[in-house]
Amino acid sequence: MRVPVSILGSQTIKTFSSIGRMSIFIWKFFYWIAKPPFRLKLVMEQLYFIGNKSVFIILLSGGFTGMVLAYQTYFGFKLINIDSLVGPVVALSMARELAPVLAGLIVSGRAGGAMAAQIGTMKVTEQIDALEVMGINSFQYLAVPRIIAGTIALPLLSILFLLIGNIGGWIVGTKALLIDESLFFAKLSDFMFMADIYQGLIKATFFGFFISLIGTYFGFNVSKGAEGVGRGTNLAVVWGMIVVLISDYILTSILVKIL
Amino acid sequence: MKEFAVEIDNLVKEYSGVEVLKNISMKIPKGKITTILGFSGAGKSTLLKHILGISKPSEGLIKVMGTDLGSLHSKELRDFRRNFGMVFQYAALFDSLSTFENVAFPLREFLSLGNNELHDRVENLLTAVGLEQDSFNLYPHELSGGMRKRVGLARALALRPKIMLYDEPTTGLDPITTKTVNDLIFDTANDQSEHELTSIIISHDVKASLAISDYIAFLESGEVIEYLPVEEFKSSNNSMIKKFIELS
Picture (cartoon, rainbow over the protein chains, first blue to last red):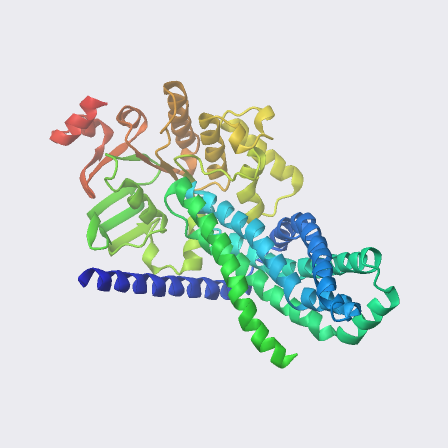
């Protein structure tokens, strides 16, 4: 009996101390973002890394997601003669859900893991200590620009995903499945509103913030050399994805009531 | 009157109830080379972190150049650390920056130098530690261990520190490079003697320490068991120190 109780106790302590550490990490971000020096150059470098370097994979996955979605929807809708609604279904699901969530999952896998690996490696090779000894605040130098860049980059990538996904849906819908083009666009303008796009953008902003927060958090908390860096990277990717999926549900339930 | 760069008074550090530094009291003189010797796990690196103000003592007081580190707020402490230059065990160069940019980094961060002046200062620093022009654009992974140490030393000297700290500067180097690095530490201290540069070396390399140091402290299980000028240290009657010297 004592063993399960002690396991439960130690897990509870671990969970609460992790929550505490993460809360301090978030607080530190909001504290240091407002303090000079403002490192715009580093933010731009991170925007390039998170944003520009994700463009190809976003275009690829966005395009094919739109095309596949159009195909799948068409064959279902055709049975009840509402195939002209393929356009709005692709556009709405892309705008509200697929663009922010899939872009979030892709960025979490690509950039969130890389952030943890970069910072983790800097930690185990004492590069972070070197910054501190020089009198540079390592959190402000490494974490703040990455979190800002992630928060800005993901909505932009999400818009790109949405745009290319809709182009994919339009090509398959009107060129391969021969849905009337004017009807395709008419239905699109009937059912699609700016609020749908705003909903996706708000979600993407939150996802970008959380993914880069988690990536940098696990980077700073790396221990035990190369093995620790691998573990930190893995945790950053897994937790980034989990947080995207869970927060998507929470944000959806709030945003559908507001927008 | 003798001036001290670092004054440590009854320093105690506990981790989870275990004392890793036990009542350490020592005064490190200004403008001299002091080596802290000891076995692995003796607490040398922990002591170094306390001198830098990266770790906070559980008990006791550390004064650096007359300033009590415990009285400084985190921002003041960070600014104060610019008095230190540190050469890390494995150099800790920034992977993403070239040799030149690694040395230029602190200068860009803290001084508003023009391009030409910055270029001249970095070049002078790199040349002073014996690096050739053709290595200036190489990245850390393209450098040998000895070259990395030289770049680390040049970077540490960039802001003209008052105290240089060396963490196991010759670990992992071949005997010839070890001698070169030790000569470099010695020459750096002498070249800067008019500025009274204080050098603190953490090491377990007895031979090199006896050759280049003015003072040696011997740390064992978190306690300073001997702290003497080098000539007196050589003739210490402490059995552990005798054994340590014999085995080296």
